[in-house]
Each structure stands twice: as structure tokens, then as C-alpha cells.
Amino acid sequence: MLSSIGVAGCGRMGQPMLTALRGAGLPARGFDIRAPESYGDFAPAMTDDPDAFSSGLTCLISVVRDTDQTDEVLFGPQDFVTRAKDLKAIVICSTLSPRYVRDLRACVPDHVRLVDAPMSGAVVGAVERRLSFMIGGVDEDVLPLMPLFEAMGQNIFRMGGFGAGAKAKTLNNLLACASTAMTRLVLDWADEAGLDEATLLNLISKSSGQNWLASGIDEIEFGRDGYAPDNSIAILVKDVEAALDDAPKGADTSLPKVVRDQILNLTPRPKS
Image: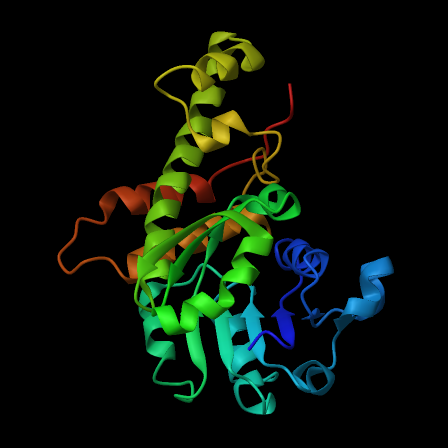
């Protein structure tokens, strides 16, 4: 299954993940719609040719942005589900609606193993090979793939059957999005009060308000960004909407919607 590994979507997360796989000695290569030359010294490991990428491919790791791009990779212009004749396993690492992920099983041939393994840790975690993976799938599908996750991450959580990883990730990201929105609001209010940002963040890191964004605002690539449709803050909005798409029947969704709207209204915050 691991004789030929391909990472589809070698952007901000996919490229360092591919680097980690290759650094661990695994036979991995990358696919992206950008021309390989744009990757500089990394170009030999990359291709934008779907036929070349799918030749001999046995394990596909999808790290694209959203459901539309996932459909393109699996069934659309790239169509690796049918193009890759030797395909034995697909690993979905994108953060997607759990409902969408569960529905993939009916769309992928039975002989292809499906595992969902969304990750957390942002770009810095991918670069430092300390991602957290939330994995959904049965033992016979997951266990042969463990060398992949161990090469890229430090915290690996088995959440249940296929789709459980996506569910755990969207729930985790609801909290991350909420703390992001509130932390940025708190910092804006602190500015109005004349409080020093660095001193306040140090206080928060040692007190009851401690959270991921506040503790790493200058390490997390989107920590100070404002919302733009094509940036990482927009991914947070997408993640809230993925959670809402699979909310329990009759659930009160008002708070997640407020969080989403707060993130949509974020403006850039300069470093103090």
C-alpha cells in the first residue's frame, strides 16, 4: 500500500507534509495544479501532470482546501479514483464536512481503503513535523498507514470509524475558531484601554484565558490576518460551516454562526 505515495494539494500544508514523508524515507511525490518550477529546489518531487502522478500510485493523500477541490481531485479533472489504476488507499487530510466525508464511501470503489485523517497544528506544526491527526477508519485500513502519520505528526488520535476523524476535527475547530474570534476582540479592547499587548498575552498564557491563538499569535501564520476570501482566515470560516453542515438535528447553532460572522469581520492586526 505504501509502495508509491502521492500528496495531492501541495500548498501551505501539503508541501511540508510531503517534505516530512520524504524526510522519513517514504516513497512520496506531490501533485499540484501549479507548475512544478514554482517549487524551486523542491520541483523534482512535484508534477502538475495527473497521468504522471497517478502512474503506479498506491496511496493518495488529499490535502486540498475544500469539498469542491476534493471532488476535483477524486472524481473531476484529476479523477485519481479511476485514473490511478493501482490505487489501494485514500487518506483525506482536509477539514471537510463529516457528512460529505461519510458520503465518499459510496462513491469510491470498495477495493480502495478510505481513511479520514484531518490534522491540526497549522503550517508551523507541519514544518516541524508535530501535527495532530484525528483518524477515522477500521484497524485493517488504518494500521498499515501509521508510518505516514508518524512521519508527519506527534499526536495521533484514533477517533472511530470512517468519518469520525472529520467529526472530531470540526468540533475541535469550532473551539479554535471561537478562541480566535474572542482573542482578537480582547486584544482590540486592550488597545482601547492602553494595555501593552505583549504583557497581556503573557498574562493570558499563564491564566484562565489561555488558548492556542493567544499563546502562538506570532507563530500561527494567520494569527494577525484579516478576513480575505482566499487566505487562511477564510479557511476558519469554511471550518465553521463544515461543522454546521453536520450539526445534530435540532441543535442550537446560533453561537457557531456568531463566531463565523466575527471571523468574517476580522481586520489585520499589526504586530506591536
